[in-house]
Structure formats: structure tokens, C-alpha cells
Length: 174
Image (cartoon, rainbow, N blue to C red; front, side):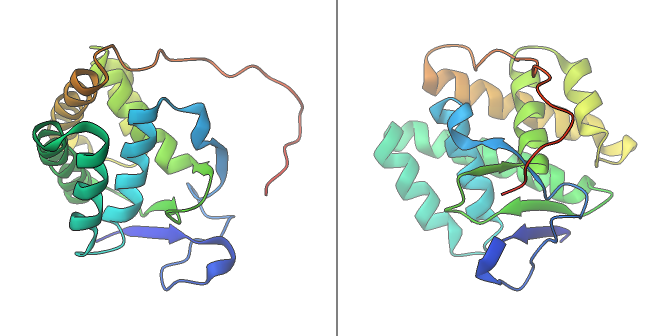
């Protein structure tokens, strides 16, 4: 599978270099609504290996109840499986405890958010970063399902798409 982990100073096996495409931090998890933060954490745990499931499902059950957690987990696994079968390059992520939001993590969350809002075109544009063209429909459909489960849990629509405001020509990397 072509997923890589950016662990900062922790030095895990699949460490992404900050200069690698997709590894750099682009924001903070706190910029996402709670359910989106949970999905990014699920992504990070999912990429940790087979033991992730019990940790993730336990966290989701505590937050959202057994039935909602189970539905969310099924939709999440379908989305991540579609992505795993469809990617053209490695996808980087940060360690589970990292407060940063990596670029690839942000792109995956943006795909789901756009799909959940019914904007399949924008979801497809973002997915084109690393999804093979012939697999795009499967990824977008899985993103729609995950977004629908997120919206159901949140009892509102997922957070609106906000366009970043330019600040400076340079940016600091933590």
C-alpha cells in the first residue's frame, strides 16, 4: 500500500520527509469541525495497521454511540479502501497525536467535504491530485457515502468550504 507517515521527530518506519509532496503541514486540526477531526484521526490510525480498528471504533462509539460509530466506520473503510486501490502516488500523513493537518490529509478531507455537499466536480478536482482517472468514480462515490454519514452524525451539513486568505509570501513550517 502506498501510504506514508510523517512522524516529525518520532522516527517511525514510514517517515515522510517534509519536502515530499503531501507531507507539509497546511493547517491545524482545530480548524476542522469535530467530526472532520475524528476522520483525520481515523485516517492516521487506519494507516498505523490492523490494530487501528479497535482503537478507532472505541473512540467513535464513545463520541457518537454504537450504531452511528459502526455506520461511520463502514463508510470510512470503504472510502480508504477505494483510495488505497486508486492512488497514483504515496499519500503522507502526520502521526496520530500531531496537531497539524498535512496537505494530503487536508486534500482527503476536502474531497469528502465537497462530495458531502453534492459538489462532485470539486471533489473530483481535488482527488485528481493522486487518484487514477479510471478509479475516480469509485473514490467519489465512497466520499459521498462517508460525507453523508458524517453529516448524519453531525446533524448538520459538514463545514462550509472556506477559501484561505493570503497573508504573507513566506510561511513557517513547524
